[in-house]
Structures are given as structure tokens and as C-alpha cells.
Image 1 (cartoon, one colour):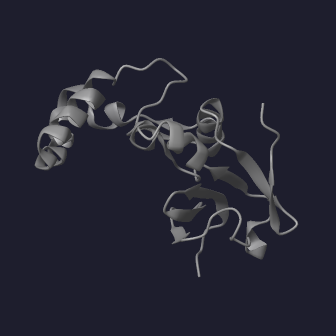
Image 2 (image 1 turned 135 degrees about the horizontal axis):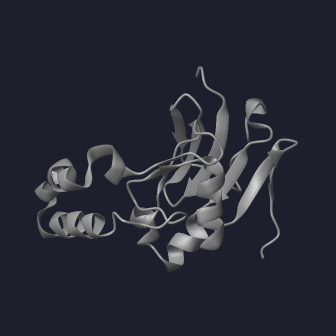
Length: 155
């Protein structure tokens, strides 16, 4: 069905998404208790965002994006892609959402100079960095093993 290999299964309030390394995704309505991993998902990472987003829903839009095709320490910062001076133009479509869109644009623009290790909502980061980011916020992380998700012990 997909050319890429699955690398991550992520659970949110709307269901689950499996990210493949060819940039394809497969989504459904399962949660960790109802989803049976596919055989080709053996060894992939699992991430449950629900406990974190229940307490801090804003992280759904403040989190960086994952690119499971990236190498271990690869990062693509949005501000570097478009150039800091072009950010307002690149984000102009958000203005269609009225005041909230305008505030979102301003928030992103003012946070473009982040130190190494800090990522914003339009930055794409590797899977290890993404898991680390969510782990720091308290999200359960696991691995698909023997056809089930084995969750890490909470720190």
C-alpha cells in the first residue's frame, strides 16, 4: 500500500496516525487499547499525546512537526527556510482566520530565534528529537514489540 516503512504510531484525541519514511501517513480512529499493530510496524516508536494534551492542549499547536525520514539529529527550521524577513508573507494565509490567525503569526514570528535544542511549531525535526520533546512534556512513549505496544516506565 505504501512504499515507505512505518516509523511512528501516534495517538491523539481523534485517533491514531502512522508516519512512514516516504512522507505518507495512515490514520484511523483507534487508541492504544483498541489498535492492533500491523506486522510491518514491529520495532517502531509509539507516542500517546492524550495525557499531555489533556493538561496542556496548547501544545498541540506549539509542538514541532516530526519528519520520520530525517536522520537522527536533522532539523529544518521554518524561519531558515523562508528567511526571517519573509515570515509575515509566508504566514499570511493564517490571516484569513481573523484575530486568532494574526496572533498566531505574531507569536511564530517573535519566536524564530530559538536556541539549539528548542523547536517551534513550524520546525520539522527528526523522530528522536520529536520523541525527546514529547517525553520532556510527559507523553508516554513505547515501542511496538511482539504485536503490541510496550510502554516505557514513567520517569
